[in-house]
Picture 1 (cartoon, one colour):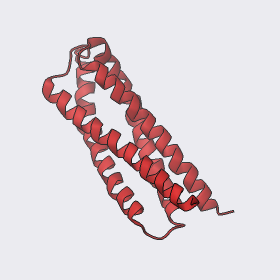
Picture 2: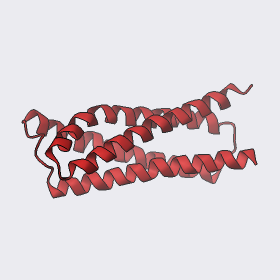
Picture 3: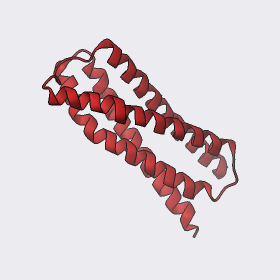
Length: 151
């Protein structure tokens, strides 16, 4: 049995499950928070957990990809995954070091029930769309790669 292939696949898939699950939860909460103070407060509280899960998902995906793809020659899929993972990391850095401190400050100042300004809503929406598209795009690309192997 090729253990790097098996464990690479397991860790890769676990990364997708955790990362995409967290992104989906925070995206839905963020959407609801656009016009609701209740959901704004819920989103601010929940993002502390989803942020960690997204980073865990990215980390597992990278480790899994390294283990899994080490069994195959360099391909377009590996290159696209590498570039998009860099984009996910950059997007995650923006969310972690710009958006998250802003939200935590709102909570600390007891303003977490106030709707976010349009400016912040636009920035966060763009960031979440990037994240959502990259996570789903990478999963689809990975499944196409697996499908091609199984043919």
